[in-house]
Length: 362
Image 1 (cartoon, rainbow, N blue to C red):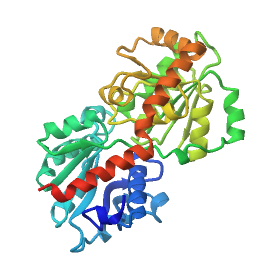
Image 2: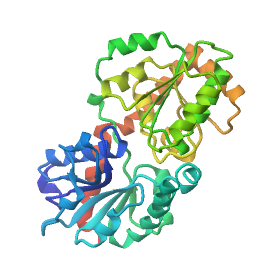
Image 3: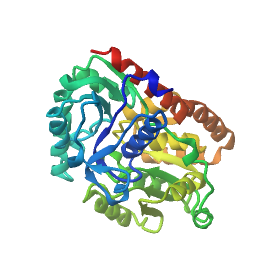
Image 4: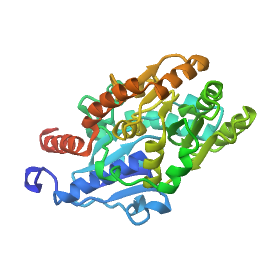
Protein backbone atom coordinates (compact mmCIF):
# COMPACT_ATOMS: atom_id res chain seq x y z
CA UNK A 1 0.00 0.00 0.00
CA UNK A 2 1.49 3.35 -1.01
CA UNK A 3 0.59 6.88 -0.08
CA UNK A 4 -0.25 7.69 -3.69
CA UNK A 5 -2.96 5.00 -3.78
CA UNK A 6 -4.91 6.53 -0.87
CA UNK A 7 -7.28 9.52 -0.93
CA UNK A 8 -5.90 11.09 2.27
CA UNK A 9 -2.59 12.44 3.57
CA UNK A 10 -3.47 13.15 7.21
CA UNK A 11 -5.59 10.92 9.43
CA UNK A 12 -5.56 11.50 13.17
CA UNK A 13 -7.33 9.35 15.78
CA UNK A 14 -9.44 10.37 18.77
CA UNK A 15 -9.99 8.27 21.91
CA UNK A 16 -12.03 8.90 25.01
CA UNK A 17 -9.31 7.42 27.19
CA UNK A 18 -5.82 6.08 26.55
CA UNK A 19 -3.89 3.72 28.78
CA UNK A 20 -1.23 1.12 28.03
CA UNK A 21 -2.59 -2.39 27.56
CA UNK A 22 -6.16 -1.27 26.88
CA UNK A 23 -7.42 -3.04 23.75
CA UNK A 24 -8.77 0.13 22.12
CA UNK A 25 -5.61 2.10 22.84
CA UNK A 26 -3.42 -0.66 21.46
CA UNK A 27 -5.64 -0.91 18.37
CA UNK A 28 -5.19 2.82 17.77
CA UNK A 29 -1.42 2.46 18.13
CA UNK A 30 -1.43 -0.37 15.58
CA UNK A 31 -3.41 1.77 13.12
CA UNK A 32 -1.05 4.70 13.68
CA UNK A 33 1.93 2.47 12.93
CA UNK A 34 0.29 1.29 9.69
CA UNK A 35 -0.48 4.84 8.63
CA UNK A 36 3.02 6.09 9.34
CA UNK A 37 4.47 3.24 7.27
CA UNK A 38 2.57 4.56 4.21
CA UNK A 39 3.60 8.18 4.78
CA UNK A 40 0.27 9.33 6.22
CA UNK A 41 0.62 11.73 9.13
CA UNK A 42 -1.29 10.53 12.17
CA UNK A 43 -1.43 11.54 15.82
CA UNK A 44 -3.57 10.05 18.58
CA UNK A 45 -5.51 12.34 20.93
CA UNK A 46 -7.42 11.39 24.08
CA UNK A 47 -9.73 13.15 26.51
CA UNK A 48 -8.45 11.10 29.46
CA UNK A 49 -4.75 10.34 29.21
CA UNK A 50 -2.99 7.92 31.55
CA UNK A 51 0.65 8.70 32.31
CA UNK A 52 1.64 5.41 30.64
CA UNK A 53 0.66 6.95 27.29
CA UNK A 54 1.94 10.49 27.86
CA UNK A 55 4.70 10.18 25.25
CA UNK A 56 2.56 8.54 22.56
CA UNK A 57 -0.85 10.22 22.90
CA UNK A 58 -1.67 13.92 23.02
CA UNK A 59 -4.37 15.67 25.08
CA UNK A 60 -7.60 16.15 23.14
CA UNK A 61 -7.52 19.89 23.80
CA UNK A 62 -4.45 20.16 21.55
CA UNK A 63 -6.28 18.75 18.51
CA UNK A 64 -6.76 21.47 15.90
CA UNK A 65 -7.69 20.04 12.49
CA UNK A 66 -6.08 21.61 9.42
CA UNK A 67 -7.49 22.20 5.96
CA UNK A 68 -5.85 19.01 4.68
CA UNK A 69 -7.83 16.79 7.06
CA UNK A 70 -11.11 15.67 5.49
CA UNK A 71 -11.47 12.79 7.98
CA UNK A 72 -10.62 11.87 11.55
CA UNK A 73 -10.93 8.43 13.16
CA UNK A 74 -13.01 8.29 16.33
CA UNK A 75 -13.05 5.16 18.50
CA UNK A 76 -16.41 5.08 20.30
CA UNK A 77 -17.02 2.92 23.38
CA UNK A 78 -18.55 5.05 26.15
CA UNK A 79 -20.26 8.37 26.72
CA UNK A 80 -18.09 11.47 27.03
CA UNK A 81 -17.56 15.04 25.84
CA UNK A 82 -15.71 13.77 22.76
CA UNK A 83 -18.68 13.41 20.36
CA UNK A 84 -19.79 17.02 20.93
CA UNK A 85 -16.18 18.12 20.48
CA UNK A 86 -15.97 16.34 17.11
CA UNK A 87 -19.41 17.38 15.91
CA UNK A 88 -18.33 21.01 16.26
CA UNK A 89 -15.28 20.56 13.98
CA UNK A 90 -15.00 20.26 10.19
CA UNK A 91 -13.53 16.77 9.58
CA UNK A 92 -16.00 14.01 8.88
CA UNK A 93 -15.72 10.82 10.89
CA UNK A 94 -14.38 7.41 10.20
CA UNK A 95 -16.08 5.80 13.18
CA UNK A 96 -14.63 2.67 14.75
CA UNK A 97 -17.23 1.27 17.14
CA UNK A 98 -16.04 -0.94 19.99
CA UNK A 99 -19.43 -1.41 21.68
CA UNK A 100 -20.96 0.36 24.66
CA UNK A 101 -21.48 -1.92 27.65
CA UNK A 102 -25.20 -1.86 28.61
CA UNK A 103 -25.93 0.39 31.61
CA UNK A 104 -27.67 -2.43 33.52
CA UNK A 105 -24.33 -3.98 34.42
CA UNK A 106 -23.27 -0.87 36.34
CA UNK A 107 -26.56 0.25 37.88
CA UNK A 108 -26.04 -1.36 41.32
CA UNK A 109 -22.25 -1.01 41.44
CA UNK A 110 -21.47 2.43 40.02
CA UNK A 111 -24.38 4.65 38.89
CA UNK A 112 -21.92 7.09 37.36
CA UNK A 113 -20.70 4.47 34.91
CA UNK A 114 -24.31 3.53 34.16
CA UNK A 115 -24.98 7.13 33.19
CA UNK A 116 -21.90 7.22 30.93
CA UNK A 117 -23.04 4.01 29.24
CA UNK A 118 -26.50 5.49 28.59
CA UNK A 119 -24.87 8.59 27.18
CA UNK A 120 -22.63 6.49 24.95
CA UNK A 121 -25.60 4.63 23.50
CA UNK A 122 -27.39 7.90 22.73
CA UNK A 123 -24.30 9.45 21.19
CA UNK A 124 -23.90 6.56 18.75
CA UNK A 125 -27.03 7.77 16.96
CA UNK A 126 -26.01 11.43 17.24
CA UNK A 127 -22.75 10.72 15.41
CA UNK A 128 -24.46 9.16 12.41
CA UNK A 129 -24.92 12.29 10.26
CA UNK A 130 -21.27 13.26 10.72
CA UNK A 131 -19.95 9.77 9.85
CA UNK A 132 -18.82 8.82 6.37
CA UNK A 133 -17.89 5.22 7.18
CA UNK A 134 -18.71 3.26 10.34
CA UNK A 135 -16.63 0.21 11.18
CA UNK A 136 -17.27 -2.22 14.03
CA UNK A 137 -14.71 -4.58 15.49
CA UNK A 138 -17.12 -7.53 15.22
CA UNK A 139 -20.28 -8.56 13.41
CA UNK A 140 -22.05 -8.35 16.79
CA UNK A 141 -21.11 -4.67 17.04
CA UNK A 142 -21.95 -3.98 13.41
CA UNK A 143 -25.53 -4.96 14.25
CA UNK A 144 -25.59 -2.05 16.75
CA UNK A 145 -24.50 0.33 13.99
CA UNK A 146 -27.28 -0.89 11.73
CA UNK A 147 -29.83 -0.53 14.53
CA UNK A 148 -28.64 3.06 15.06
CA UNK A 149 -29.34 3.87 11.41
CA UNK A 150 -25.88 3.61 9.86
CA UNK A 151 -26.04 2.43 6.26
CA UNK A 152 -22.37 2.32 5.20
CA UNK A 153 -20.73 -0.08 7.62
CA UNK A 154 -18.11 -2.79 7.79
CA UNK A 155 -16.09 -4.86 10.25
CA UNK A 156 -12.50 -4.27 11.30
CA UNK A 157 -11.46 -6.65 14.08
CA UNK A 158 -8.92 -5.91 16.75
CA UNK A 159 -5.55 -6.96 15.33
CA UNK A 160 -3.07 -9.28 16.95
CA UNK A 161 0.52 -8.22 16.10
CA UNK A 162 2.42 -11.52 16.22
CA UNK A 163 5.76 -9.95 17.17
CA UNK A 164 4.30 -8.68 20.43
CA UNK A 165 3.36 -12.24 21.43
CA UNK A 166 6.37 -14.17 20.14
CA UNK A 167 8.44 -13.32 23.21
CA UNK A 168 10.27 -15.43 25.79
CA UNK A 169 8.55 -16.12 29.09
CA UNK A 170 9.31 -14.53 32.43
CA UNK A 171 11.00 -17.65 33.77
CA UNK A 172 10.66 -16.64 37.43
CA UNK A 173 6.93 -16.08 37.04
CA UNK A 174 6.59 -19.30 35.02
CA UNK A 175 8.24 -21.26 37.83
CA UNK A 176 5.92 -19.66 40.38
CA UNK A 177 2.81 -20.43 38.31
CA UNK A 178 4.03 -23.98 37.75
CA UNK A 179 3.27 -24.68 41.40
CA UNK A 180 -0.32 -23.42 41.08
CA UNK A 181 -1.75 -25.91 38.60
CA UNK A 182 -4.21 -26.68 37.25
CA UNK A 183 -4.42 -22.95 36.50
CA UNK A 184 -7.52 -21.29 35.08
CA UNK A 185 -7.06 -17.87 33.48
CA UNK A 186 -9.22 -14.88 32.69
CA UNK A 187 -7.88 -11.58 31.33
CA UNK A 188 -9.90 -8.37 31.48
CA UNK A 189 -10.64 -5.39 33.66
CA UNK A 190 -12.65 -6.21 36.77
CA UNK A 191 -16.13 -5.14 35.72
CA UNK A 192 -19.66 -6.39 36.45
CA UNK A 193 -20.34 -7.42 32.85
CA UNK A 194 -17.25 -9.66 32.84
CA UNK A 195 -18.60 -11.62 35.82
CA UNK A 196 -15.36 -12.43 37.59
CA UNK A 197 -17.49 -13.46 40.58
CA UNK A 198 -18.83 -16.36 38.52
CA UNK A 199 -15.28 -17.50 37.83
CA UNK A 200 -14.68 -17.59 41.57
CA UNK A 201 -17.80 -19.75 41.95
CA UNK A 202 -16.49 -22.03 39.19
CA UNK A 203 -13.16 -22.36 40.99
CA UNK A 204 -14.94 -23.29 44.23
CA UNK A 205 -16.75 -26.10 42.41
CA UNK A 206 -13.65 -27.19 40.50
CA UNK A 207 -11.53 -27.49 43.65
CA UNK A 208 -13.82 -30.31 44.76
CA UNK A 209 -12.38 -32.22 41.80
CA UNK A 210 -8.90 -30.68 41.73
CA UNK A 211 -8.09 -29.39 45.24
CA UNK A 212 -4.90 -27.66 44.08
CA UNK A 213 -6.59 -25.66 41.29
CA UNK A 214 -5.96 -21.91 41.05
CA UNK A 215 -7.59 -19.03 39.19
CA UNK A 216 -5.75 -16.00 37.81
CA UNK A 217 -7.78 -12.84 37.20
CA UNK A 218 -5.50 -10.53 35.23
CA UNK A 219 -6.70 -6.96 34.74
CA UNK A 220 -7.26 -3.53 36.25
CA UNK A 221 -9.85 -2.94 39.02
CA UNK A 222 -11.71 -0.73 36.53
CA UNK A 223 -15.04 -0.25 38.29
CA UNK A 224 -14.42 0.82 41.85
CA UNK A 225 -16.50 -1.30 44.21
CA UNK A 226 -16.74 -4.37 42.00
CA UNK A 227 -13.16 -5.37 42.78
CA UNK A 228 -14.01 -5.33 46.49
CA UNK A 229 -17.09 -7.43 45.83
CA UNK A 230 -14.98 -10.07 44.07
CA UNK A 231 -12.45 -10.01 46.93
CA UNK A 232 -15.21 -10.44 49.52
CA UNK A 233 -16.69 -13.39 47.62
CA UNK A 234 -13.24 -14.97 47.33
CA UNK A 235 -12.74 -14.66 51.08
CA UNK A 236 -16.25 -15.94 51.85
CA UNK A 237 -15.60 -19.08 49.78
CA UNK A 238 -12.20 -19.52 51.51
CA UNK A 239 -10.33 -19.12 48.23
CA UNK A 240 -8.06 -16.20 49.08
CA UNK A 241 -4.95 -18.34 48.60
CA UNK A 242 -6.23 -19.80 45.34
CA UNK A 243 -7.18 -16.67 43.40
CA UNK A 244 -4.36 -14.63 41.88
CA UNK A 245 -5.15 -10.97 41.13
CA UNK A 246 -1.94 -9.40 39.79
CA UNK A 247 -3.57 -6.25 38.37
CA UNK A 248 -2.05 -4.67 35.26
CA UNK A 249 1.05 -6.55 34.14
CA UNK A 250 3.73 -6.32 31.47
CA UNK A 251 3.34 -7.87 28.04
CA UNK A 252 5.96 -10.48 28.89
CA UNK A 253 4.15 -11.46 32.09
CA UNK A 254 0.84 -11.58 30.21
CA UNK A 255 2.30 -14.02 27.70
CA UNK A 256 3.66 -16.07 30.61
CA UNK A 257 0.20 -16.36 32.17
CA UNK A 258 -1.26 -17.54 28.85
CA UNK A 259 1.54 -20.05 28.30
CA UNK A 260 1.38 -21.43 31.84
CA UNK A 261 -2.40 -21.65 32.19
CA UNK A 262 -4.29 -24.87 31.52
CA UNK A 263 -7.56 -23.32 30.37
CA UNK A 264 -8.91 -19.88 29.48
CA UNK A 265 -12.30 -19.45 31.16
CA UNK A 266 -14.83 -16.68 30.57
CA UNK A 267 -18.18 -16.25 32.25
CA UNK A 268 -18.55 -12.73 30.81
CA UNK A 269 -22.10 -11.80 29.89
CA UNK A 270 -21.18 -8.96 27.58
CA UNK A 271 -18.17 -8.52 25.30
CA UNK A 272 -17.94 -6.30 22.28
CA UNK A 273 -15.01 -8.28 20.92
CA UNK A 274 -12.92 -10.01 23.59
CA UNK A 275 -9.25 -9.57 22.64
CA UNK A 276 -8.08 -12.15 25.23
CA UNK A 277 -9.99 -14.76 23.23
CA UNK A 278 -7.77 -14.25 20.19
CA UNK A 279 -4.70 -14.02 22.42
CA UNK A 280 -5.60 -17.41 23.86
CA UNK A 281 -6.12 -18.84 20.37
CA UNK A 282 -2.75 -17.61 19.18
CA UNK A 283 -0.87 -18.78 22.27
CA UNK A 284 -2.35 -22.28 22.22
CA UNK A 285 -4.67 -22.13 25.22
CA UNK A 286 -8.05 -23.93 24.98
CA UNK A 287 -11.09 -21.76 25.70
CA UNK A 288 -14.23 -22.42 27.77
CA UNK A 289 -16.67 -19.51 27.58
CA UNK A 290 -20.20 -18.54 28.41
CA UNK A 291 -21.90 -17.89 25.06
CA UNK A 292 -22.52 -14.16 25.34
CA UNK A 293 -23.28 -12.75 21.86
CA UNK A 294 -19.99 -10.87 21.47
CA UNK A 295 -18.03 -13.92 22.60
CA UNK A 296 -19.87 -16.15 20.15
CA UNK A 297 -19.11 -13.74 17.29
CA UNK A 298 -15.37 -13.82 18.01
CA UNK A 299 -15.08 -17.54 18.70
CA UNK A 300 -17.31 -18.64 15.79
CA UNK A 301 -16.99 -22.46 15.60
CA UNK A 302 -13.98 -22.69 17.94
CA UNK A 303 -13.53 -23.17 21.68
CA UNK A 304 -16.18 -24.64 23.95
CA UNK A 305 -19.24 -22.49 24.65
CA UNK A 306 -21.87 -23.06 27.33
CA UNK A 307 -25.32 -21.51 27.65
CA UNK A 308 -26.02 -22.13 31.36
CA UNK A 309 -24.03 -21.44 34.50
CA UNK A 310 -24.44 -24.70 36.37
CA UNK A 311 -21.12 -24.56 38.21
CA UNK A 312 -21.07 -28.21 39.27
CA UNK A 313 -21.40 -29.31 35.65
CA UNK A 314 -19.05 -26.58 34.50
CA UNK A 315 -16.44 -27.88 36.95
CA UNK A 316 -16.74 -31.35 35.45
CA UNK A 317 -16.40 -29.91 31.94
CA UNK A 318 -13.42 -27.85 33.07
CA UNK A 319 -11.68 -30.97 34.32
CA UNK A 320 -12.27 -32.75 31.01
CA UNK A 321 -10.80 -29.81 29.10
CA UNK A 322 -7.78 -29.70 31.42
CA UNK A 323 -7.00 -33.42 31.44
CA UNK A 324 -8.14 -34.82 28.06
CA UNK A 325 -5.04 -34.25 25.94
CA UNK A 326 -6.43 -35.41 22.55
CA UNK A 327 -9.43 -33.11 23.01
CA UNK A 328 -7.16 -30.22 23.99
CA UNK A 329 -5.08 -30.68 20.87
CA UNK A 330 -8.15 -30.67 18.63
CA UNK A 331 -9.37 -27.45 20.22
CA UNK A 332 -5.95 -25.81 19.92
CA UNK A 333 -5.67 -26.72 16.22
CA UNK A 334 -9.15 -25.33 15.48
CA UNK A 335 -8.45 -22.12 17.41
CA UNK A 336 -5.08 -21.50 15.76
CA UNK A 337 -6.66 -21.90 12.31
CA UNK A 338 -9.45 -19.46 13.22
CA UNK A 339 -7.12 -16.82 14.68
CA UNK A 340 -5.38 -16.27 11.33
CA UNK A 341 -8.07 -13.77 10.31
CA UNK A 342 -7.20 -11.62 13.33
CA UNK A 343 -3.45 -11.46 12.74
CA UNK A 344 -2.01 -8.07 11.91
CA UNK A 345 -1.32 -8.73 8.23
CA UNK A 346 -4.95 -9.65 7.52
CA UNK A 347 -6.50 -6.80 9.54
CA UNK A 348 -4.09 -4.23 8.13
CA UNK A 349 -5.11 -5.19 4.60
CA UNK A 350 -8.79 -4.79 5.52
CA UNK A 351 -8.10 -1.36 7.00
CA UNK A 352 -6.42 0.00 3.90
CA UNK A 353 -9.13 -1.46 1.68
CA UNK A 354 -11.64 0.62 3.66
CA UNK A 355 -9.43 3.73 3.38
CA UNK A 356 -9.33 3.39 -0.39
CA UNK A 357 -13.13 3.61 -0.49
CA UNK A 358 -13.31 6.92 1.37
CA UNK A 359 -12.75 8.99 -1.76
CA UNK A 360 -15.82 7.47 -3.38
CA UNK A 361 -18.20 7.63 -0.40
CA UNK A 362 -20.46 10.65 -0.23
